[in-house]
Length: 394
Image (cartoon, helix red, strand yellow):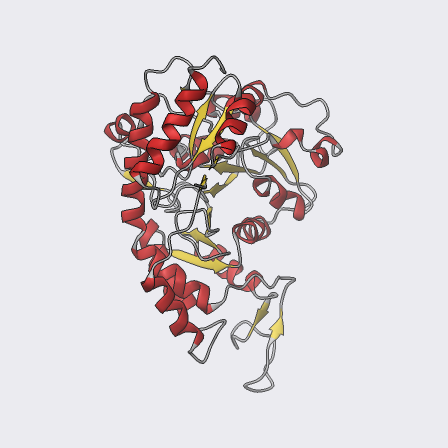
């Protein structure tokens, strides 16, 4: 038996949609791209969506669209995939890190305010906020800080499609809806909620940013006569700015459309899996859950955790990792703190200390979490975790 930490769910409707796209006249830049964008924008309740080749490309385009350059300083969290920081470096900007809240794994907004207040207004230009593991960060509070200190916000929502928090006036705010963040990004990697193999999406409510993203996605080229300086005929196009080939094929968007239609059911199943883990580990003194108040308690408080990951913390993390692996459970570690990476160490992060992030990393382990995980498989995972910690390996 092999149980991975994450796995895509592909059925006959997905396969049929992809086959149909393969048989169509257009494999790329066809009608399925716009259809997927429209459906996804509706799903997260944003005005605009731009489909791209992957989540990292989405982050890069966001940084470009917001004008990141060599004078731009941006804050992000150390507990995220490196792309959340790398996207700023791609554009010549610089990254600084804000430590996490130990109870959630999210960027600590109190520490963020301290960082912003320690410098003149405008010193930092932006914040890359991450909905880590599927837990939506409170963007309402972050937006208030961003406005005070003249920062834009990119929401890295790659873990959180379908998640939401409730704002101060009782409104449900879906991740990626553009109410508080300037731009949001999503990933469609196979282990994510919506799988297209590779793929990503950017959402926004800003029409100017939307148009900028469309240009940057396709080499900075336009065929729109109103945007060109001249036109020589129907074949003519102009490159107006330096862009990239970050397009996504029609066949992947066809898959994205069918996957999106099952997203609500996928979230429901993830919540059921999380609830069972909560019950199994809640009273165990040797296991700390990343969100100790539990999935159902969060829902009662008006927050839906999308559970891309289910993270626990134990004293002997390496031992548990090896024990699970030897028993066919391929748990994973999310994430190695960014500032400990050799590239970042060699780029001026030598003396950076993030106490909460580093403490989190020493104990964290992500257990299997995906809709196709069966009850029997989950019980097996639970039994192997409990077996390890209760036999003195803590």
